[in-house]
Amino acid sequence: MTALATLAYAGRAWPFEQARALIARLVKSRVTGHEAQKQALSLIEAGKTDEALKAFEGLDRAVIFETGYGPSGLPHIGTFGEVARTSMVRQAFEAMTNGAWATRLICFSDDMDGLRKVPDGIPNPEILREDLYKPLTVVRDPFGEHPSFGQHNNARLKAFLDSFGFTYEFLSSTDCYKSGMFDQTLLVALERFDDIQKIMLPTLGPDRRSTYSPFLPISPKTGHVLQVPTLERNIAKGTIVFEENGERFEVPITGGHVKMQWKPDWAMRWAALGVDYEMAGKDLIDSVKVSSQVCRVLGGTPPEGFNYELFLDENGQKISKSKGNGLTMEDWLRYGAPESLAYYMFQSPKSAKKLYFDVIPRATDEFFQQLDAFPKQELDKRIENPVWFVLRGQEPPKSPPVTFGLMLNLVSAANAADKETLWGFLRAYIPGATPESEPVLDRLAGYALNYFEDFVRPAKTFRLPDDRERAAMSDLAARFRDLPADTRDAEALQNIVFEVGKAHEFEPLRAWFQALYEVLLGQSQGPRFGSFVAIFGIERTIALIEQALAGELAA
View 1 (spheres, one colour):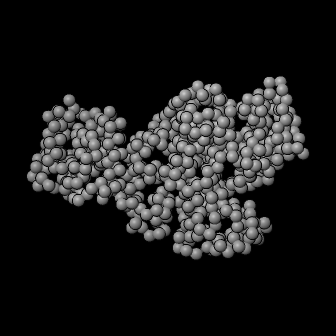
View 2 (cartoon, one colour):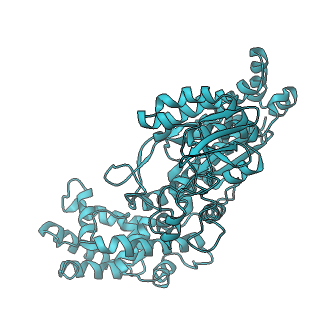
């Protein structure tokens, strides 16, 4: 067993926990007999996955991870989170099994679903209104770029996933239904129609219960996805009979003439594709339970998985696309690195977390702190570091020598409007540094400029210092004047700031730093002040203090 596999099997990070649970599920579902299961699991735990796969024929089949996507709208931050987290579990699984067990990640698009409403912010909405209730792969593309709205959104999804370097296979619901991939399982569903109804009907209200069918036929007349009762079933012919506007139709359930309601559809997909792992949001706990029951009726084994917590906005309210109270992917990527987003998704997926603009700088700096530690760690600590999962085996980039928080305050104090202005400060602080030699730092500069312009500048509120703060800041400026103008020692500068705060009896000392931030930078928090002075420059800092004492900043 390789050192990595040994350590991964004992790993404490949540993807390792999920991978261990998945291995147990695979052995239980694919190996017959208690003793044989014990033997197979023992071999895998001993690092002999390759031997286990040879010894137990049913075991030697690719492990299928799945994520689902509804293409009635564009990909969003939740889509990214689900694919990123599932990829992390896949990475942990492959490490545990020495890469001997083949894996696949299927990103499934439910693009045969009927368009129920026109999404906000879409051009040419009249096209969508005319095509309501038709399958998304039949609805015309209002952007005029693809044969259908579903295919447009699928293309966006794939480009979105490709931009992050995910390894996946894309499957279209329409293609799966029409190609016959689902036919065998659909025929089982027809045969076990009553058993499915026994599961589904108790979950529905009285009105819905009276008309519910797990099969949604595609109207031969209008092309709509119909929610109508199934009046007759012909198991031998593989057909159902339904009524539309007083006229009866008989259609085969195979070949794309029918799709299933979403919970039976989810279950049917698990059974037909042999899905082994799929996670879902906490709001779908009951749906997972119902779909798992239907999956068993269809002869499948429900996948392993877990329910992650939902994101909240800054007020602690559930994020809703319709309310527009959350972050979009475009939002995050305008203000922060993709790695910082993946890091945020890694952190405590079973805990509710706020997802709003202020978390981006903190997540960015936390990721780079972890990145700093990564090369110095032993392998057992390295695989517990979020960086190992975020980078997915890629070579770690060089961590920037300046934090994102410090960069933001530099932009703020300098009123920088472009990267070149920022780089004027950065070159003085980091001799020889260029955008080419420090590409990560250059990216941070761009994010900082965007973040400052959109959030910091509009919210800046300067205040005048009180008498004690005024005396302390005058003292600080005087001590800085005694230093050489080219002083760049951040630690020495920080010590001077500390000494001034103590000399003027600030208690607690953080009140002194808060005063500096509020009076000089127009905000209540900031970076280590010594680091800020080192990069901003002694003379500029003295000038900033003099402006504040003269009342020019709070004017």
